[in-house]
Image 1 (cartoon, rainbow, N blue to C red):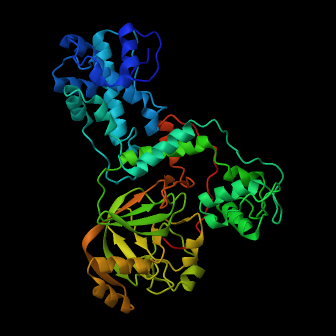
Image 2: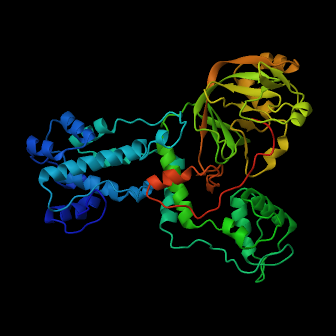
Image 3: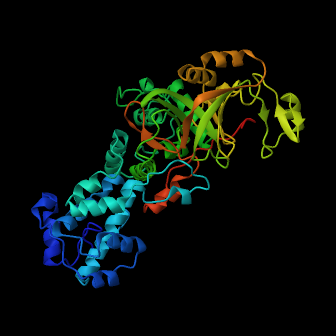
Length: 503
């Protein structure tokens, strides 16, 4: 039968049934005596290397009392709270010997504890480049101590991230995973034209606002049976969405447009499970002062001494030239940067002339100035991927909702203002001001590097505390979702295209 390991039952023994029935009452009310099992029997049953090491550490003795087994049962049965309800961690049936049951529980406990503390999947195996510091909890030592002290329930309860954002995402996952509502909640009836009245426009506008295409204040109310009017402002929001998803930008709300607007509960649950997993990968103690870029949402957050002090839009790599998930120190500001064009970027002769480029040591170089692809400031980072933050000469691109447009580097909105803020806080404001006044490329070192994390979260908590969804522009959710037991997504992906030359 599947017992503590999968939350189901089939042909349970009397003692196992009692454990399931009493799990909710707490492990302290059950027998806490470890079973007496011969070491030779345990050694014969243990084949997994991690399990063998664990028994070696604990002295090759029986580990799972009735109380401990019940606590494990309850912990794994509640794994839906962590988006792991499609992952099985083992099975027990009545034909197993006491030693085999003990070993099976240990194997399941180690696997589930690892999934909660460090993630069920290894991001380094899912990405060609992944240098973000990962959670690395010693779950074996923690589990051994929890078994010894009869604290199995408390041990599992403390393994997943404990922050409010994770808890909100968890609550949202439970909500959407348990929803019986099918995709396509807004009926694809007649096409809606500008000037029409239609009751569906309330839901359409609400979805557009939730995804950043329309200000919340512009969501109309259901004023009568015919519904609100399809205004020019609402049509412009629809056109932005259509542009991002590769739909004809005619402002008409037809079946293709509604297919994008209708993100069903199943797709939301899938995205939330992936978001929970990605958060479990991260170290529980990020640097108090850091810059976090969310490539899926194309946004930047600046944390200073543990407080979020600045948020702004960014432009990240287009699909095929993705901004990689990495951590890299920002170590200097560069005023009036020149741009050495990577050989991976092809440049026509007409562009070379228009951008005033010249050749140095076999490379094309664009001189400093407001027309430079890097803009007027570059934020130098130390990594072997040639990834950095920078300004841009085309600030209008920040007005787009989908901003996966670059060749991999991160363009920062109001980069000069951001550089000024950092310079002032780092005590180098005068040096930075002097560098800015020069017309030449000038370097200003930071007294202490600031860690930059390039993350990827398309389901997250926004500044208002609401669960927010974005597209999966790189398609990176698919491999994670598959590893968590999900199938493919029915949602369309954004089709933003790089439309300029910059890095």
